[in-house]
Image (cartoon, rainbow, N blue to C red; front, top):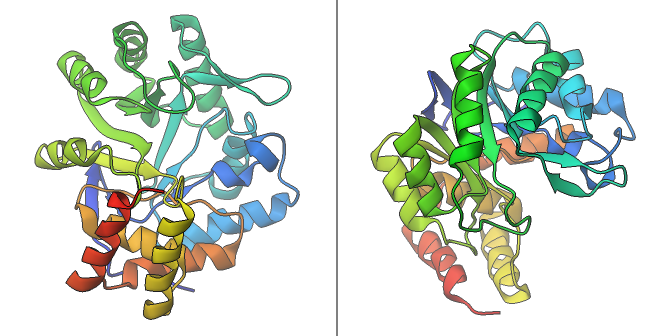
Length: 291
């Protein structure tokens, strides 16, 4: 079993976590809706991740809904002392699986209690407030009302630390005026680098940045460059994309998801991949290639 040993750690809230974590999204059914086709396999992947040294798992009660949290509880509870569970609130699923905003104070309170119950914990380590002004990506607008509701839950002792997801630079600045933010989770990868400035600012202040969709939104030309580099390094495109993120900034924490132990091992092995300056320069060129 591949174990994580070369990758460094970074602070997430009050914990130090390994930079290669695990995202639980793919443990639900197709479209992150309903149960997985093989629940035992989902349990096995989670246990394999912990056995390999993963100590940061990203989840949400709207995955499924409820499914991934219940599988995490079944697989891992009672939880290892060093495990940081990060969840997200701010959205819900319709009966047909659509993603809908759920950001009223009542909805956010309900979501925190759902996460506590389904994970079977008394306090949530980190809760990311997912902003749903636009489902396809960050959109401007004040997030004070939603954040104030989450801060109240933190003051009740139900939430240890607060993060943000699907947010703009201005929203991060607004939030940091109101409370301590321990992480930001946005789409970012070698092809989509809108958050370069934000990542550097957060790194300066010791705040984690958690990119999702490491292979999301690539044009065919960008994909072919990534594949060429992967072939050269005898690695998979996903491994190269993850390795590039690890070297991009020390505050980047990765949460690649998979429902397969084999893919889990491949993802974790990305921490062993050394990218030369020449390779990094070639990969950096991907984001300037227009489709």
